[in-house]
Length: 316
Image (tube, rainbow, N blue to C red; front, side, top):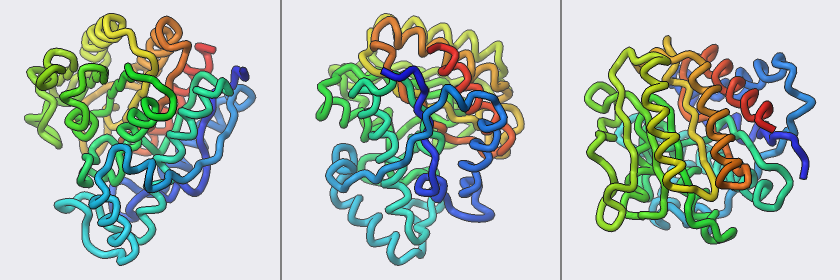
């Protein structure tokens, strides 16, 4: 097994975005990779090429009707896929499929023993529901990956950890009745930020009641508040004993993001990544995939994601 961390790079995932002046522009990929190139980590990174998810793979999480609707809207290139946040730009079906496929390729690379850790910067599209787009997210790569891990690799206890400023509602509600899906999310309180969900009382439904962890934090929360919440996440994960970790490390929780109100530094992201690697080593044979998620201040996302990669590389 190589000790290199797999980091995904390529125009296929770079083109996932909605153009100016939309916050989710196609420049985010290159801004991150420029920062990563300057970090001195290149000799411990394997740059992996994106691949496209098949329709059958998308259908592990999404409904057939929704997949077909995105395909048709992507050809037309007009209107929105949701109530007004996610434009139906030409080619978005293929770009979103490339995002999903890259995460699945990372999963396969880990499960086949080629590496233990991977990072996909343009991924973590956590708002997309099984039958709808939402919040800049067309297909939910993390949701597909969780189902893929179960079908293709026999992994039942998948942990999803999310520190994006926004609640990962598409993932949460996609698995809220699944007691074996491990969900932990620290996010800005939904009373102040889209999508308005993720109250601490939302712990799952039916047989899964009490198995999910939502931790809303107040606007202006900084690294101190994050550290207190993060201790709860670590305790929860150790009790849950996952077999594989998916980490959504959205950088819109850093101070200065134009559409959120938190005040973390990149140290929060680096520390969380390092801690998750330790937990992965304890319970998951080291297996963890990081996804970039949100982040609309380009300087912030470049620094935060590079710190995540640095922490994962250092963890070995």
